[in-house]
Length: 400
Image (cartoon, rainbow, N blue to C red; front, side, top):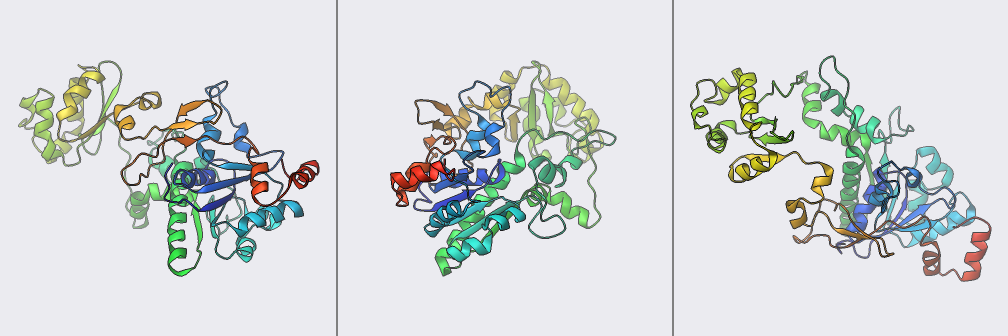
């Protein structure tokens, strides 16, 4: 992991994926992240499994948002448990939560409670739709709050078609990255003038940020029509099928600049000056025909052949890779995007690094997610509890 946040202590009272992902990023950056979980139920994401994960080395739903942390099983609904939490807050820099307003008030962990105990704590909140407005007290999940409400699902739905299902945890993970970055900015502000800002990121705002161009256009009455692959806005910004059933993605936004070079790589120099395709204006008028011609060319070779041929093309392109293929992509490996994650029990797996790098160095070896309550005793010992006190807390169910 990095050391840019070495010495920063984060107390996390959150669950599922969005806000815990922010904690994982902060841990990647070197912060000491202590995750508070109920001693009986723990974070509910621990029970979220799928067929692929069953019997596997690890459960990615649990590992990704919780790696690098310490887990303390603590019932903060009790007076004793809450006082332990407050004792942790005394020496903390950041408090991270996604609990709903009613729960935060009931548990006495809202902004006024935490900053009354330690006014130097950066209070970081993840919400579904924001902390004010008619739905401030409603929870949110990525698919609903970011993907559906944020505009992506609508924008990707063809006329008369069905909304596409979200293929990954885009809102949770990008929202978590946003929240981690905001925490870092707040820590810088505190360093400058002593003020610890309250930080908030919502899934709804995250989804809107993805779609900011379309949303902004919509506010002035401009709508963007849905285009199919056979009728794109630009024939050179599209996907093309290969002989072996794979796909190549071209993103030649400056189409006139790259068209001659592409035609030469496709071994079709005759197309450079073809009156149907010679410049952007005529290609746009004949976009379906141009797409069809390119389809016929790309389908003559395999993806492997096209990767070799296009390796020297001047424009931007990419193979369409499966998640499994990404795990062995030479470019990802060269940049350290797939670091080893040590579970601490002899098991090591290859994970995905959070996107930011520092000093052009890869993040290096990461530590896996803790078991539920794995670090309860060690953290309590750090706070000055003795073994008899810990045993008594365990006996009454306050800690795990």
